[in-house]
Amino acid sequence: MIKLDGRRLTNALVKLEQACDAMPQIAETVRAEALGHLILGARVNIYSTTPGAYRRSQDLLRGLDTRSRASRNRASVTVLNTVEYAVYVETGQDSMSLAQLQQLALLQNNPADPLSLGRSGVNWTAPGPIVTGAQVFALRRMQELFLLRARAAVR
Image 1 (spheres, rainbow, N blue to C red):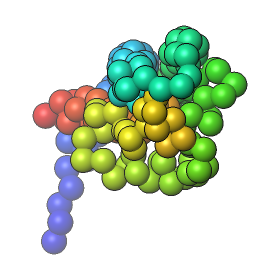
Image 2: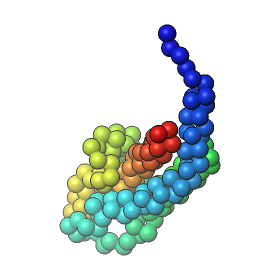
Image 3: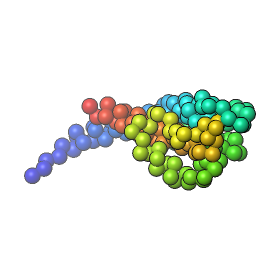
């Protein structure tokens, strides 16, 4: 027979609900960290690679953006690049699908590491999943930070 203590359960639920108050702070933290991840991804996939035929204008780097929105019970972080040709860099000339890139990013052991598939100034036709890697990082980081808050709340 299982006995439940209604008071203890209610107290635990109240504490979990209070953990939700941290959602705006968590979203802002993840937004800032995801922007850093984007910059690292751009460096790994483009700006720190062997130069090639194209002039590196830094436009892709300037187009990196992150935004956060949060309320008490929900939060989101948007990770994007506003440059019109960013999707072509992301997917490469062979047009690897965004779904394939997401799968590769999700399979990474450490989502904090930028995802690279060998793109460089010389190998500029390969995919450079700058945004996709940062999106998966943001998702995992948001989950991690909220889980830490929730665990701390019920201790």
